[in-house]
Length: 219
Image (cartoon, rainbow, N blue to C red; front, side, top):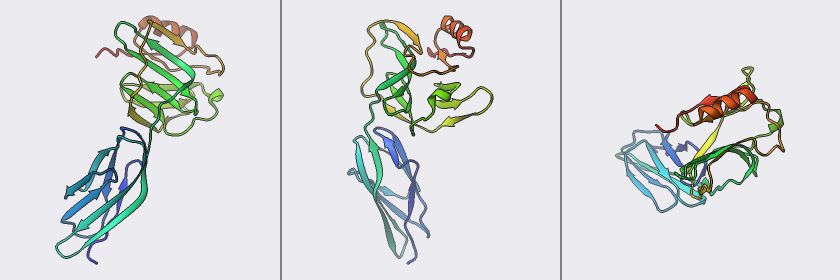
């Protein structure tokens, strides 16, 4: 056989509305490709990669058919994509701020399944794995500019957390304007890296927790 079909994907497990990227790693001189993505979507053409967004939870079987001028081959991966329908429930709120007049808010919390979550009305950023040993943390951080999440310590021993990004299909409707830092004290975090829209809050946090950042989210 002159062609052998195979492919990879950027993330086999994704939250609903996350976009995944399929990449062709077939062997041979490929002149045509057909992607069958499992949810009724079929993509014909000759692109070596295809991006796709699954809108319903479930398991999806994906097939790639490749062709050259003489032959064709296919590769099918059963239940290859697993799409979760995640609506996190806060268990320990690290920080949250609400503005009733505009409906804007963001929350940084550990959910009921022990994942770290940063939530806005538009998006939910959630650590891919459960975070263990939260009582040991001296740094937890989410930077909305880079969309990166970290945990560890301020002594340089911290790492980026792999996270998912999905649309928020059940946003909170703020009933009042308020800001809370570690309002629930069932767990102890020595220092929080907080990005705040308020310079007053920045000064307060810096004085009480020792570390803080200022972020102007109006731009």
